[in-house]
Image (cartoon, rainbow, N blue to C red; front, side, top):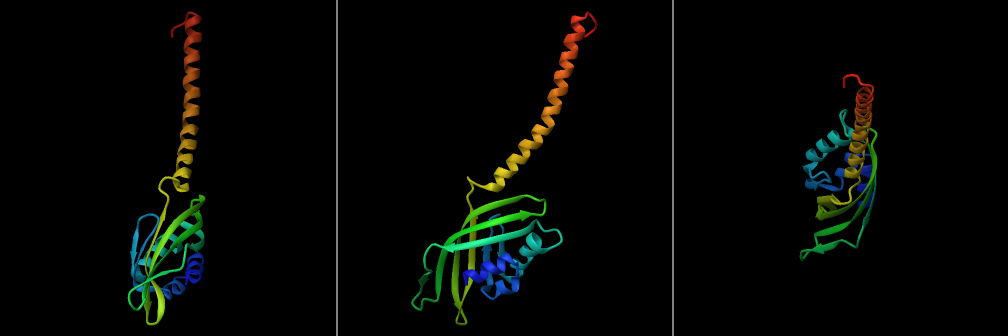
Length: 170
């Protein structure tokens, strides 16, 4: 099931994904948005990854599980799985970055088939490449404005000193 969901994410192929996700699934994404059910998942994918105003141009994901699914209940019909995600994003503005995340999934047996009923994925708040890239862009933009302004202020100051030394008005 994990491999099929990774394949569905990478394509993206929502019809393939929905074969492995319950109708009323709840998904919490890295950006803290929550999608509810197939309709909510489709709306999120359309807005973020497939629609005309999408933010993500491409996404490649690999997923690992930390251990076998922990089964619960007397009939062992639900369980918890968890692990890591490695994702390479290309955004529509050209920004690219690699994101390492953690995930947790609740799975249930639905008509004899295992499906995801809840999925939560989160990135490291303190070591986050999106924040790092945004800070780099801001620093580059600030330097691009501050350097020419500083140069002009310096020239004006030199001109004022030169005029004063020559005895002219400052």
